[in-house]
Length: 319
Image (cartoon, rainbow, N blue to C red):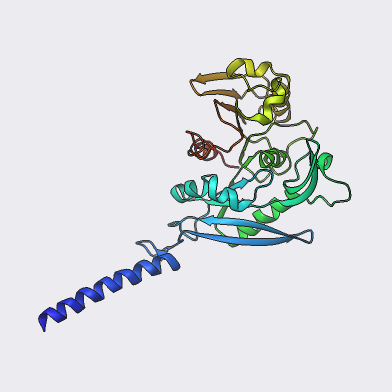
């Protein structure tokens, strides 16, 4: 009888633990002083902007107080991608889980475009040059407005800190990130475009914000700037007309001189432009990765993960 009672007691204990663990994955928890805590989850949202359904994924980390505002990082995918792809491969949900911030993965719309002489229908962010490649007769939707509508929604739905909003993007998403750095920098603390260059638009940014810009010397999208060859590493890179034009345009746009410092390692070249022209304190970093192709480095496709570089960069800045 005592053995049966002991067995039943142990069984009830095990079942209780299992029930608790199940509850932890489904319900909000509390910390030792009774504050509600979030659980890790993916939430899919959509908004209607200018009559068009727009989609984005929210990654919520576990263990943050529901009443405490935390940072948010947006990750914008490249051509032909979507939010789902970069939710899975960018590394930002993993970094958000560790560092306790929200990570957002929006999806762009699909357009008929003609690029490199080939017509196709694919996803594209409305960066500055979309109208030059879009097939005639299409409405090109305002993705800056979509970004602002997402941010408003997030701030009313989650505990998002409006002073710590950060944006990264890859390729076409990187080009769009540059657009946001100009046209939405009043609500963004810092940006990090990857796998792209900046084209002159003669628009003044709403705020002078820090920029971390990265690409690989083996990125074939850049080869036309160097006679269809990989980019040189280090000082020779700045002798290429297209690269020099891009970097000087960024400096001019964000009120920095072209004076810079260069740090070189075996696998990277890292420039810093931080001499202001208007008494400003923003900075532009350019990071060239040796042997990186046209990819967003995540630690699997390249030895370095962009998130390990960008989160320390982002977290230094607030509005």
